[in-house]
Image (cartoon, rainbow, N blue to C red; front, side, top):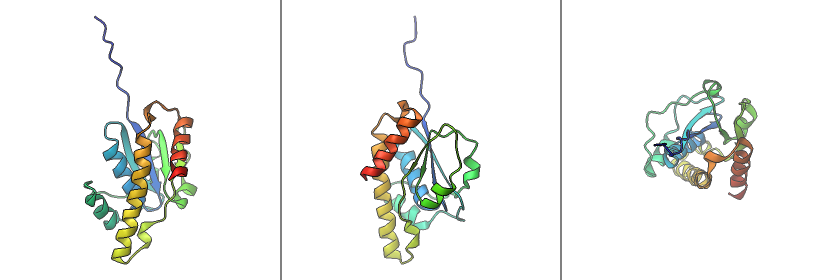
Length: 165
């Protein structure tokens, strides 16, 4: 008897980069991990990591049912040797500092930094807006058969998602 089941596919490896790895990239990583569970292996890093994840990012994620306590921002150098299918930069500084990662599709999903808001109400609104923008893009990405895309197709699909948001 022959086994006709398809071999398991490995999850799509996505790295999200930002300068401080404390706000936008953490939110994107959390969304990719939770919405793409089983399909996506997500991580995030920064070119100049902050000492901690922004408390408003944690609060916003928790409000949407995503526990994110105890995370530590990582430096992008720690991720350079790992294989990534897709690298998403979410701020202009990270895009400019992004290392070349052979074989990875790269896309820029630039967003304003919600951490620039220091007044609590303004910060909460900015983090919620960031969550909504990233959730829309992550959901659109995950609606596609990304596991079957080559690097060029993956990059083009991610660019179209950003352009339409």
